[in-house]
Length: 123
Image (cartoon, rainbow, N blue to C red; front, top):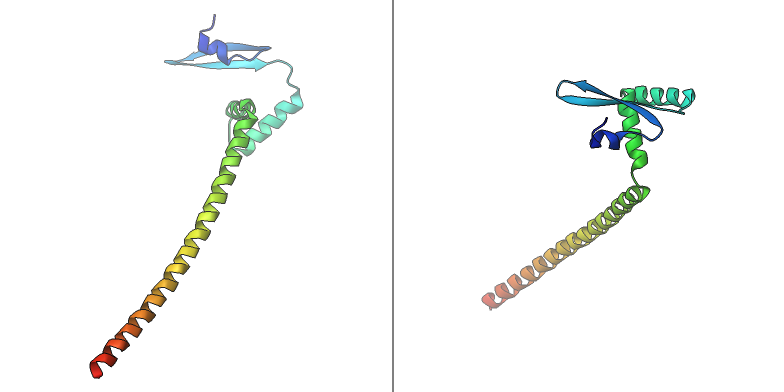
């Protein structure tokens, strides 16, 4: 009745109909047992996000089906990146300050050596 991709997309406890549109197909399905208040909430959320109900439900299901570990891992990675980025910024600032100080010291040494050379020439 359904191909393997269609079967994989079917919800348990739901009814699906394959509707053919030109070259592609669209799966229409109904999930039994969803209370009307939940459907209304989904419609309102879709409207607020400027989405059609089917697109919003699809996105919500994908988010719900994504393992929480993936979300936590992404948050941990972002936190580590922020920490490393902050440390690198601090190190770059310190190195920049050291370069400015070394430049000033070299200028002082240059000036002192120049004076010594002038003093030697005047003798």
